[in-house]
Image 1 (cartoon, chains in turn red, purple):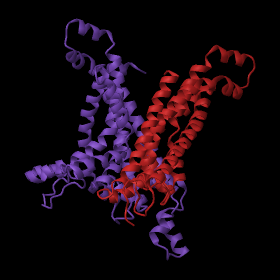
Image 2 (cartoon, chains in turn blue, orange; image 1 turned 30 degrees about the horizontal axis):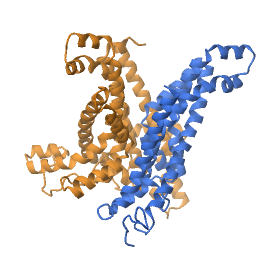
Image 3 (cartoon, chains in turn green, purple; image 1 turned 90 degrees about the vertical axis):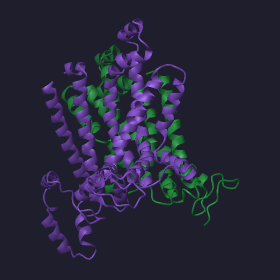
Image 4 (cartoon, chains in turn blue, red; image 1 turned 180 degrees about the horizontal axis):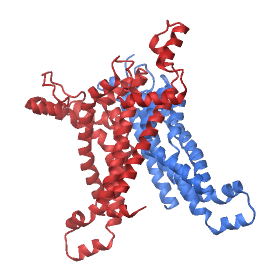
Length: 227
Length: 333
């Protein structure tokens, strides 16, 4: 199948199987965004829970959980993801699971710090004196104060995650062909780089655009929340 | 001071132990039974059971972990399923090109981080341009940069080669395994020049990500330091801005930069895997990428352990260096 260059009929040309590159790039971008959102959500939930528990319980629980978090932060995350995904077998679901295993410590730290700063505030003390239970205290009176920094951390994270996901997909750890994933598309397109540049350049440029927009948005959110 | 260093080394040992534990846990989770894979499809259940017993796979998990640790200490990482030779041997063989690439990248990181950091921190014309350039480079996946540079410098301008470590078939004495050093030893200028040309593009691509991250930290740190009293004093004395920067500000701003540099070693090592794949650089990164393709778990696990140890040890050394360089850090605790 001859590869067609970018033109009116196929905006970004076609690949070696005659598939429209533009269509595949658009679908790949959707997968990227969705996958990044899933990892961030799981990081916020797991890390947030650990952070809240450590921050409210204090004492020995806090010390143990935070040392554990530090240990996880000291390990080289992306490398471990590589090994985890290699062990679980390739596929987008396994890749997401692998990243999620190592992506929570950052959020645990943010939430724990915020919670420690909030529990000493007068309104929390008042609620506690008013007889509010521990769980309700955490959810209603302490947690809302932690949203800002978590939101900033999460939006600054989007760019990193999109890049990491693309790298893993590039190395063949994402969904198998013919699923449209930006990293895998670039990797396949390298074969035709000198004859049909668009097959490799377009998905790679899409990753760049997504990460760039993500980073810009992250900066904007940070300025908005004012940290 | 010595006590603090001893604490840090103890912490290092714990993290290293955790690293081996994590890798062991990953290995234990392998979907494919390693015994069945080794014996092939035709093995009878009895044979598999016997082999499992021989290899100790029927023992409790902590005894297996103990065996795993003992093998590690002896430097035994198992046998690669793809090359059928020992993973340790493979790693030793493929390490020199990667070390060469990483060192060349470190030089670029140093130059780029310092340049970008200072340029964007001094609120002069072009500072906002520097910020946009930095944000864009931080968002570029390494394979995108690599492709663009190859298309420009190889395909279009014909200035630089696009793949491999050298294009000459001239044999150069194999003394150290490092091509550049071997070329110098053999005093073969042609091979040396060729090797340097091949090194330029991949090392730049590996360097950009870490360099930008470090430059961003440096920008923040420099801006803070430039507002301190001693900087005002130095300016009031009539020192030139450059002298203020290099004599009075730079050294003070380096502590967070140093910490960030240690953390960026992780990004550098992951970048190496991608970049070596694009440029067909015959090092550990390409070895890992091939191993991932062929489900060669022992090789992937081996490289993960080696890279992981490098990362953890470098960060411990950085922490200690920080304490040596900055007396303020010794007072903490």
